[in-house]
Length: 71
Image (cartoon, rainbow, N blue to C red; front, side, top):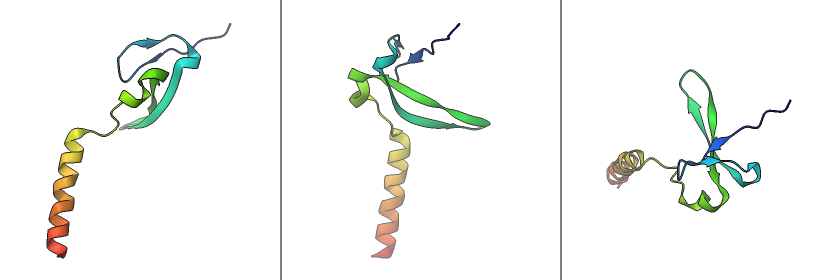
């Protein structure tokens, strides 16, 4: 008996029922394990936000402070 792996789309949170429609978009690390793969529907790949907006805001402030200090 074969087991089909179902994935959830990161963009729409819908179940991806067709294995050919599942696109691997990222791998997220886990705190106490190997982590997990992140999938999206083929049509939703461009809609997936891979960068955390809070992280981007914090890193932008750090980079700006470093650039100002080096100048």
